[in-house]
Image 1 (cartoon, rainbow, N blue to C red):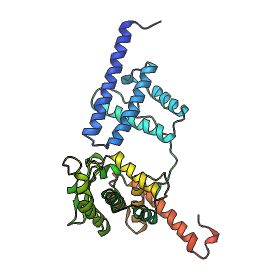
Image 2: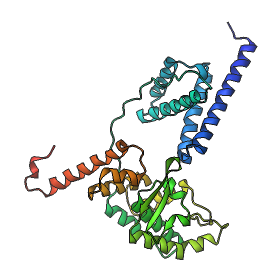
Image 3: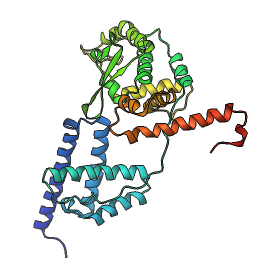
Image 4: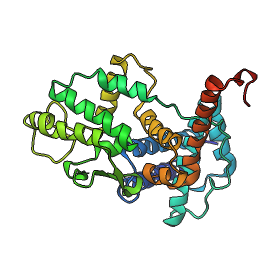
Length: 317
């Protein structure tokens, strides 16, 4: 039996209400939790897809069941989404419903009891110190843009900063007297990272010889890294610079700015830094997030032993 116009109209109102809730939740992530623009976009995209699915299926998202949610995840799997992507969608949905319950907009959290797909442990991709040297060495630092890009790479390597954290830096966040940089991580949490002389020299060179020329093309701003038009560089603009310079040096095109962060952590652990210190420097809330780098360091030790030990041909497990 076809639904009456009254039911159809009510259902449309429910759908619009759910979309409004999603918009409020996204604003909460951005304004209260202080998530990066990249993370906020990911949440918004995944939740919009979920809302569209509930509308197509005629499901009231406010009273959705565990069974319906499992069916949605199964459809994503059948559509050949990776386990990682399915897990990301589920994480977004969980966060939304947890917030909806907290705000007393719904009474039950249907997503709370759904288990996440088990992901195969994947070690982070890293670069070698030689890779970093090659990339920076290939940059023409006789131009303002070259000086800027060299400073970007030096800072990423020296601080382990997320690319979004670098994009949000201002000139005032670099403290040359104390040899440190102030970073604002996820949730606007502040942390101080010590800087060694080489990166300080690169930043000083940029501020003296690169930034003034770039700033002349735009409006006054305290943002640290500027585009050729004098505008603050966005996260995407910094990623583009990273990819361009990495390819120009003949390095793996799959390398990302996050690989530099992984390299920072791995080099510290390989050099003897303790896990808690690395956790603090990376701005990780959980030590378990940092622990993955111990596996990378162990693998490097094994490789070094295989190459250097006279009995290495027997192999090490």
